[in-house]
Structure formats: C-alpha cells, structure tokens
Length: 104
Image (cartoon, rainbow, N blue to C red):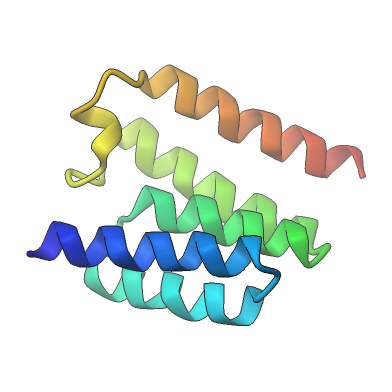
C-alpha cells in the first residue's frame, strides 16, 4: 500500500542517517517526497540530515517547512493526526531543533 511504501522509505532514511550515510538518507527522503510532497516526517528528517552535515541554515529551512505543514495540517497521511501524539508536541520538538541550530 501507499502507507507501507512511505513507512518503508522513512524507515530506510532514518536508518541510513543513523548509520552516517547521509547521502543515502537524502535519496530515501527525496523518494518519499516524490510519493508525498507534503510529508512532514520527510522534511523533519531532511533537517536532521542537514544538521548532521553541519548545515544549520538548510536544517532550519527543512524544519521550518515541516512546522508550516504541521500547523496547516497539510499532510493528511501524517500519523501524528491519527495517534495519541499531540501536534503541539511535534511543533515544540521542531522549535527546539531550530533553536539549537541557531545557537551554533
């Protein structure tokens, strides 16, 4: 299913990033965005990849995009809306990531 495909792509991206393969993580995330251009997790992870590479301006841009999509609830397939996790918690986590990068 489409949901399974998106979950697989996100999982592989996170795995690649945690394994220090930021180039492959970016490929997985770009594929995810090709399936769902409003994917909040994809933009959040692109921010994490950029931060890992030391590119805080790019990380902040990706996290800001994720926040805007989240605030607008523009990603109807985002599990945040279907689970017990609160949108406010996600927004706060993104704000903390942005603030930490700005401190650098």
